[in-house]
Length: 469
Image (cartoon, rainbow, N blue to C red):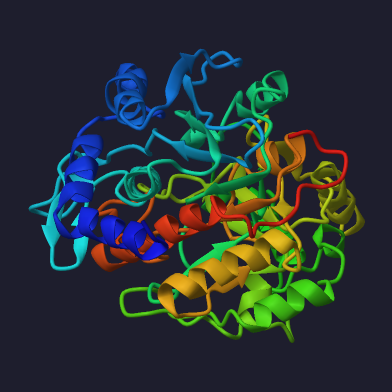
C-alpha cells in the first residue's frame, strides 16, 4: 500500500460520516472540568470512549489518578511495534469548558452535534474533542493502509486542561522514562487562517494578576464627600494607564521579552494575520509600534485588562466606592522569565506613585512560554510532509498566541514539539456556539495521515547523539 492509499482512507473516513459519528458521541459526554456535577464524566470520557477506540488499534491503555488533588484523571496509552523504531508522543484533552447552555442560540445545544452548512456546533467540537478525534482516526487510516504504523506511539489524554492542566507537569516528571519519545505531535488551538494549513511550535505563556485599591470600607455619598475622599476607581484607572498606553503599547518595559530573533522574525514574515468574515477586524493602531500584526500577537508580550470593577455597575448609586479591582493578564513569549513579571510590575507601580495598588497572582500556577526554533530539522520535515499532502506551504508559527501545557513536553520531556491545529480563530472556543469547520476536519484527516505515514518512513530527522532508542 502507498502513502496515497493512507490519505485516501483518511479522506473516506470523513466523507462517509464516520469521523462526525465519533465526534457526535464524544460531544454528548458532558466532560466539563470546571463544573463539579460533571466530574464523573471526565473518567467516563476516557474509559468508555477513548480507551476502547485505542484498543481497537492495538493500544494498551491505563487510566491513572492525577498527581495533584482536584485534577482529573489522565489516560496513558501506548502501541509499541519495535523498540528500535522512532517513537511519537501525542496528546489531547478530553475535558471541555462550561457548557453555558442558556447562552447558545436557538436550535443549538452544547451536548448535541448540530450541522449547519460547513459548521458542526457542539462543546468540544473545536477544543479539543474534534482535534484529537482527527488524529486518532488518521492513525487508524495509516494502520489500515500499511498494516502497521512503522513507529511507536505513546498517547497522553488529560481531563483538566481547562483548569490550567494541574498535575500534568508532575505526571510527566514522574513518568519521564515511560514517556520517552523522539518527537511530540499533537493538535489544539487555531490555524493562522481557516484556509491555510498551520504548524506551530510552542505557545505563549499566561500569568493572571489581580490589581486592587482598597481605601476604606463601604461607600460614601458623593455629594457630601466628593472632592474629599480619593476614588479607588480613578486611582486604579490611572495605574492601569501607566502600564499600557491608550494605543496599546506596554509602558512597563520590564514586562517585555528580549528582541525578536532573526529566525522567528523570518518565520512570522510568512504569517500574515488576515481575519475572515465573522472574525473581528484588527485594530492596526493598537499594540507595539513598528511591529507587524504577526509580531504583535506571536512574537511579543502583551498586558490585558480582562475585567474592571468598582462600586456596583449593575445598580450604580451616588456614592464614592471604597475599593476597585482589575483582573489582568500578561501573555508572554519564550525568553521571558515569568517569575520576574510580578516583581517588575510592583517596581513599575511604585516608581509611578501607585504604592496603594495591591498586586497578587489570580492563580497559583501559570502556563509557561515555549518555542521550538523554526529552523529545527523536525519543523522542516513536518512542513515538507504538509506540502506533499496539500500542495500548500503551511504557515509556520514559532508559537501560537494562546497558552497550552507545552512546557510539559518541551521542557520536562525535552522533545521537539509540533502542533498541527484543526480549528480556526472564529470557532467560538470557550464561548457559546462553539463549532468546527468541516473542510478543516477533512483536510486535517489528510494532513495527519500523511504525517503519520511519513513518520514510518526512513527519512526522518536523526535521533540526537547519545539518545537511547
